[in-house]
Image (cartoon, rainbow, N blue to C red; front, top):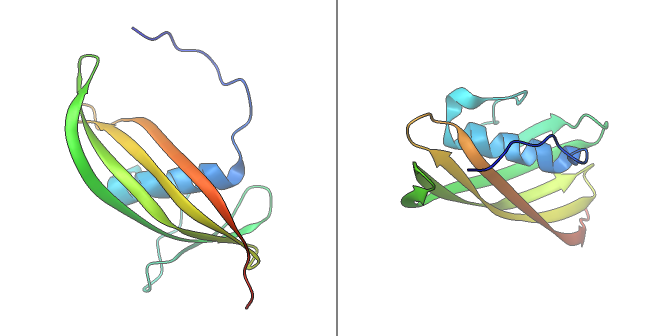
Length: 119
């Protein structure tokens, strides 16, 4: 059994916002400080460090499995992010949801910079 330990570093506001959007996309009742998406499916929000994020994120169910004593559902994440209408990122990752408690056991987001985006 894993022992809980406090965080050793502050999570990046961009990664935090993307992880929260993933949670809200998979389990809509889990919305955490996130405005609803626009009609075109784009999430726009101001990060806690003042930057503006526009995010198009999709989730796809991959599989049901076991982690320790839990039955879990695994989802893939993919999409695109634009920060301050300038820097673009490709977003990939996965989220693991405990079936019994509906708690997220893990939300992993990888950001690959694609460079500056011209208007």
